[in-house]
Length: 532
Image 1 (cartoon, rainbow, N blue to C red):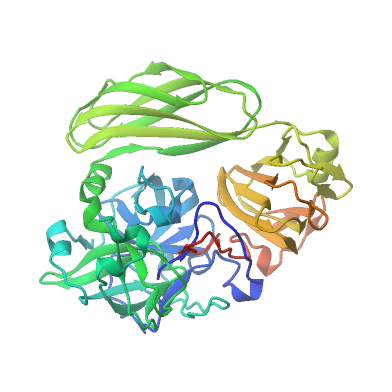
Image 2: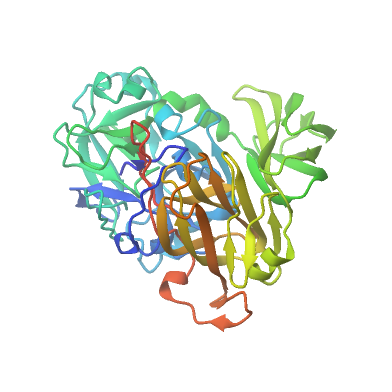
C-alpha cells in the first residue's frame, strides 16, 4: 500500500483513463495479499472525498486512534481542509450496504509542521472528527517496542489500494486486503531515510509483496501480546512490489509526543484557503476552541507572511470548553499564491505552540473576453496581469517570456465538478498547465497533451485556478495551452457556458482527475494514494 512517490514538484507522465478506477485519484493497493476477514481490522479507516460515494471517493487509508481522532499520512491530506473529507470507519467492503452509517465528517486537519514531501519524512497527519465515535482504537507502538524489533520481524499492512504491481495498469477491488512483509534493516532503506528515525522500510528484496497506490495513510501493524500495535503509516515506495525496492512507512513511535499534542483537545483550522483576493487590505479571524479540560494561557503571538498586523487577540487565557479569536489585518499585493500565518506559544505541557495560517491567490478582475468564455452562474472570474485570451468558447494562454505565468481563476463554484477540454503543446518537464483547486495543486500537464479533464468540487464554494507557467525560454510545439468547453456540473446536471443544460455522463459525476503523474527527479518518489 505504499503510494508511488510523488515529490512536491510533480513531473507528470499521465496514464489513460482506462487505467484508472472510476475517475478517481490513483491509489495503490495490496500486492499479492489476501482478503481480510470482515472483523479483522476494526480500526481501519477509508478516507473519502466529500460528496462522493464511498467506493469511488476513497483515496487513502487511515486508522482510528480513539475518541474523535484519525491517524494518516501527511501527503494524503496536505492542502485539504476538513470540509473536503469524510472518514469511513470499521468497514471492510467499500460497497457494503451499511457503509454510510460508518461515515463521519472531518472537522480539522493537522499536518506535521515539518512535512515538506514524502522523501524528507514527517509524513504524518491527524484528522479530528466533529464528535467522539465508538469504535475499536488501534494501539500505537512506542519507542521501546520499535527499538526491540529485529530485521525480519513480520508485519501486516492492509488497504483498498491497487493490486496490480505493474506501473502501467491498476486493479481495484472494494474489499479490504492485507499482506505480510518483513521489517528491513534500516541500513538497507533508501539513502534518504537510512540515518533518520522518522521512517522505516518493509518488504522482500525479491519483491512480490507490498502495499501500493490507494493504501497511503493506512496502518502497518506488528503482533504483540495484546493483539496488534500500529508500527507505521504507509508512505511511499519505488513502484509496487518491485525487486530491490522496499516500501517506506512513517515510524509512529517517533511521533509519540506530536500525536499526543494534537489529540489533547485544542481545536483550530491549521490552514484556511480564503479564495481569490484583489489588491488591498483584508481582515481575517482565526478561532481556537479548548476542550482539553484545563485552562490554557498563550503568549508571543507572531504574524508571518504578507505584511500584516494582529489587531485583536482574546487568547491570552483560554478556558476549558471556550473559544478565543485572533484577528489580523493583512495586505494583498502580490498577484500569486500567498500565505499568512500566526503562531502562539502555550503553557500546556503537551502543546508548546499553535500555528494557524490562511492562504489566498492575489489576482485581478478578468477582462470581458475571458469572462465571456466562462459564463458560469454565480461565479467570479479573475486573471493575472499576463491574461489568458478569450475567444468564443476557448481560452488560450498568452505569449510568455522565461519564468512568466498566466493565471485564470474561477471562484464561487458550487459543489459538483468542473470539466474542460485541454490542448497542451509545451516543452515537456519545463512548461506546465497547473490546475489548482481551493489553493492546492490538483494536477498538471506538460509536453504534448490533448484530453478532457474532470475536477471534483467538494465545497459549497470552490475556487479553481488554471495556470500556464513557463520556466524556460525554449519554445516547443505551439508553446501554448488551449482550454475549451468549460462545463460546471451540479445536482445532477451540467451547465455549459452557453447556459444550456446537458445530460451528465458517468465520467462527469465529479471526483477525481483522470491521470496520474510520476516525477523523475533523480529518485522517483511515488506516493501511494489516489488523486482526486
